[in-house]
Length: 313
Image 1: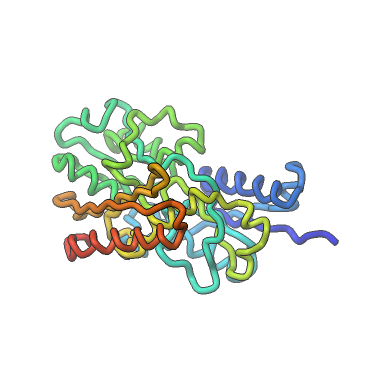
Image 2: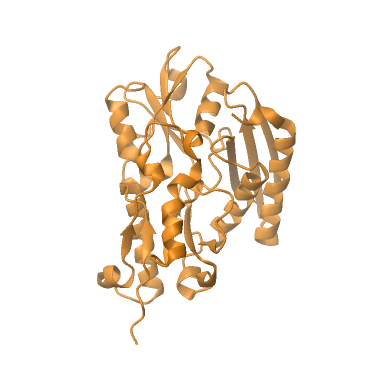
């Protein structure tokens, strides 16, 4: 009997399709199918999202992170696709009813990169330089260190942002190193930030394979999971959940394994960079995902209690 194809939903950007093709290859391998059958076994369905269409405003002004997932999740619920591939940092803290983040492959580098045509490092930017950003976290982290900078809106996919930078719309920008690596563009990174000093977005560098609840235990789904990645992002997304993270919260979280323990740092900043609140903690890695998530929830709540109303735009 022929196995029905597993249709993979993805945004149509170059980076999203690179990620979808990697998942396609992994699904074929999990099913024991040869690579040349990938388009039959696991076809990719391109879906344009509201976040892709709206490029002239910050996400927080038009609906938040869900704009990058809404149409894809609707296709998954309607049965038009069988799984979806997302950048985890774009995912809200909770999935819609009936859907679940079922698998997380091995994480790419989670750090942020500084990119500029003229300056070798962030601290080399002159007084009043224009920093292109769409992320409230990156804006706040930059202004915390350099309140003199002028932050200008720079939205679009990686190629679009690099083109706008080259066209002089800003003096520098910040992008996820993971995306640059996946696109073969890491040479654009002039400086890579220390993730302890500047924690990235929760789950940055990780992929999320989303399925319907009834499909999450399928063997091909579980074959995509990478246990250390799942442990790390359980902690980071615990912090996201506690802080009710959205595009209105400048939130960063980063985990690392140290001597058998999962160490987590969580920070949130006032949107204008005028204040920062940080918490750190660790848990034995052997205690698993529930303990990791509990650590994130605890540290995230402590940051939320400290920052209060100053955390949201």
